[in-house]
Length: 148
Image 1 (tube, rainbow, N blue to C red):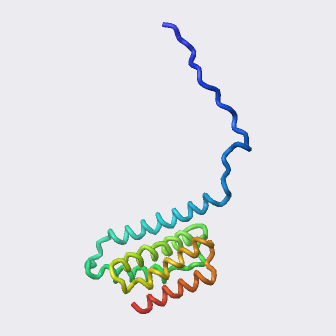
Image 2: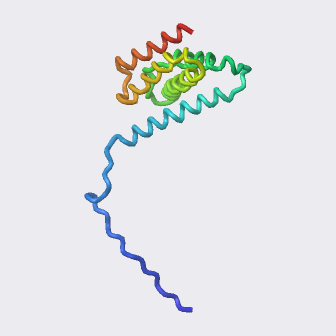
């Protein structure tokens, strides 16, 4: 048996000018949004799957109360901090969105709460800041919690 050399087509070198360009900042934004969704989904799923004796008939009210508990423990000044404080803030903000949306899906009375949390999250995702508009929406959501 003779061994024949294997040939492959030459690969042209890639110059920096011909390399695909990436806009700086796109990857962190995608990572942040993905983190919010995964973190919020995980917290919401954990709460939903835990068996705490709640009845299905009260599920929307329970979800609304849990969203309000997440909001009451949420400190926006800790959001983005390194370590456990930042993780807690990120997950409470995400959980408030998931749980308030679940409550609103089950009972239209909770739509104002869900809408305010959603607006706060959307505004924050656009600005990466807890500015005046985001704080106003959080205040509306917390006010809706006071009515529960």
